[in-house]
Length: 480
Image (cartoon, rainbow, N blue to C red; front, side, top):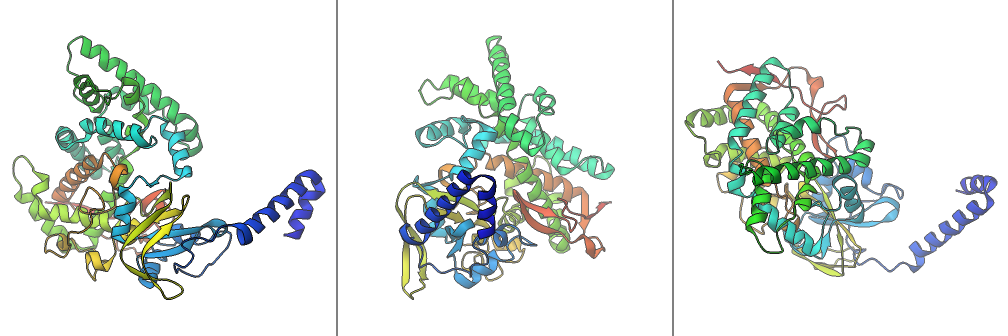
């Protein structure tokens, strides 16, 4: 440290002195003046690094959960970890605590997440706005994402699933391409062409996506309004559904055309990676479990005529089990907007040996909702919670409890006022694609042990090859 400060001072005495002063002030504040954390008595794993805390172990293990799942087994569903530079964080997989965090306005996005959403999606995005504005937009947008609206896209998804089957046979397209088309199919057709000009470089995305997306959205709205004035049907995509809902709703809660246009980045960028990865992990687990794959294929073949996907018990059990073991966002951060007391499902033992039944936190406290860990709680999912067993969703192993999210009591689509609005959209995509693929193709593991697939968090939980490349290798055969 002394050599570093001397180096700074050598080239700029004023700047070097300022750095020394800042370092001293920060040190005194951290160790002397900073208020004692209200969670300091919560136990947790030993600190590996003051600079990185537990972040490297949490986010960059060889396989996601190598450390986190063991921490849960050792310390329980609530424990304390360190962020960078000694920052205290609560890791929470307790269902009662998660329910409280999701369903109270006391906790919301962290400032860093808010800023990232602003850079990519803009200040009008449903993901960005807060308070009464968020409530109003969310209520208005339900018209485009409720069960009735989503069912309109089933034929589109089925056509795209057929394309995916054909491309699998010819090896010309990836699941990501098809699922991106599924998202685009709910938009005006010309958007796909325009969207090809959206930037792909990460840094360029942050600079330009927001602006280009708003331009796209504004053009869509203009075209829709012109078509409506000519008496044409515009209720054939999300934009049309929202515009019509706004025209029918004379209340101030209706979305303006400009606000609908402001959701374009959200519509274009959200969803397809989540569904792609879910289908990939489902195929991986079905390849590992050929008996379950055969049972699912039999269920698919028994379904004749118009398919009612929600009435296929094994299909939906496979989807639920896949999303349980491989949630797209294995963790989500929240910050306390005011002082709060987090209730617990059961007591935790403090470092002083006391039984804690609720945890007081101060305004500004970071908490991490450990969704992937919650999905592996033996008390909630059974003693074999680390295993892929879809039958748990059929035989009564899974019990009702505190409602965590909108789908199967899982946290994969978040919950409360931040519930993913397009969750029905994603589930229908996955249902349609799995039926098409498993009904016509068989998937087995390759003999090459070098193609071991690991789940890694690369923004989202993603299947990853030993080379570090995203994806998985499976042997695919056409069903005779």
